Length: 68
Image (cartoon, rainbow, N blue to C red; front, side, top):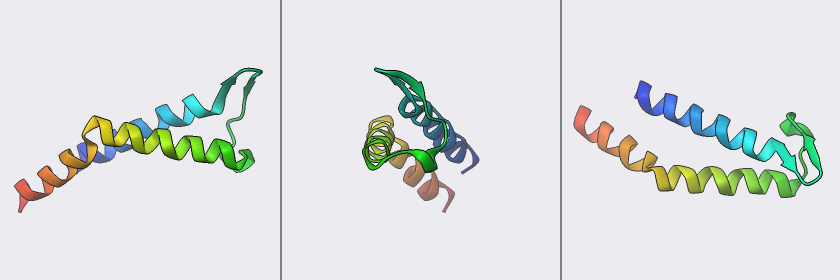
């Protein structure tokens, strides 16, 4: 469980930086409370796509089944 938690935090940080840095025009908005709805939606979509594609959910459920 510790490994899946670490993976979850790493994915969150990577997506956070990818969304916070806007290249056109170049600006960095690190405060998520200052983000508009479009930026929040982009963060959530990218985050869940990366979790789904990385097999995070499979690892989580397989580890729980093996421990039982």
